[in-house]
Image (cartoon, rainbow, N blue to C red; front, side):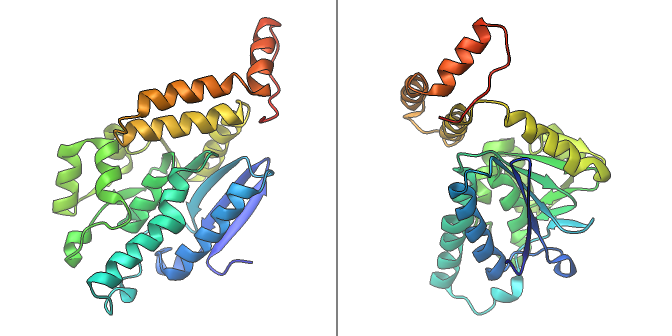
Length: 259
């Protein structure tokens, strides 16, 4: 079905593997287009409850963008490339009502770091490395990296990484808040699946609203508090809230329908 992606749906988790190991899974226009396609399915297929995004092989999650596609672009072309990526993939992942976790299995650089950061949070293997080395190419991140890295780790460290092009390893990335958990490579996918399976036992409508509210906060949305109140109220109109409250009072496990 896809030329550059592998997809596997089990227990409600859609695992999306970027599959260009010979190119360190670099993002090119085909990968971006196919990620856009698979995200449409994520949004529309009720059998998909959550997403695990990773890279093929043991070396790279996504080691960057395909630079060979850049050389012919002018200013307008570069801006159009970045806009297309934002619309098709990066903003779609960030705003997805279903949880999307990046399982970072190696190099996560440039566009790859940006792809990981657009996910709701990140796990990493012990050999993972993160960085935004675009200034080495006379560029800056164009897929939201300047904004999301600053949101995640703060201005000072984001500034340093962006203008030195330095990389950080998995443990430092965890200390900075860029990743939530570090696992041995062999355990990365299994442990990340466990987190998603736990999330899938929670009320899906509430999870979606929590994602939206946290995104508001990260972006400094001045309507964040008002949006939280509105969404909190909307939860009271759901079957899930009635089930959750009843189950709590009856001292049993809630079974959520996602309605």
